Image (cartoon, rainbow, N blue to C red):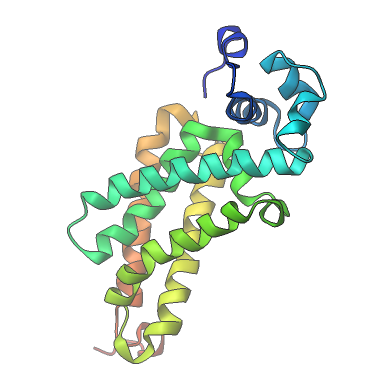
Length: 215
């Protein structure tokens, strides 16, 4: 995520302080992480008094939760763009992993807000966004898994896809594959291929119970 003094000075416009504070929060978290974030620094970057943010946000976690909701909205947009080009339920599910990687490459540290503990209790919309995302994917998951164990298998598949995607994101941001900006597209493709294999596995009659060498 790019940073500039111009963004700081131009961030706040009359009537838009809450949105400006969210933008500043995303920039700060991207630079110093969730633990390094302070409301005072967000106020400084939006050129308002230290107390001004509290007219819109009850406390630090409430502001962080609002910023996390903005990341969630952006991620949903990326997911929807990818899913719109998919030709099957399997592809729609597999593309989720690649979407996570691409979003993490753009948002970097701010992406950690999605998984920061405790924020969902401060923002009902943030909790709702998680449920909406699951609702978005569940129809495809039900289309993929065998009907005789659809409910359990669909939930397990979405859990596994989330774990796989978060794993690739962690490796990307840790620099395991190289400079994130340079390798994001390649890592997104790897994550998508791995997710596709996982989805195919859940679609088998009973892949884990087959005898070795059996057909």
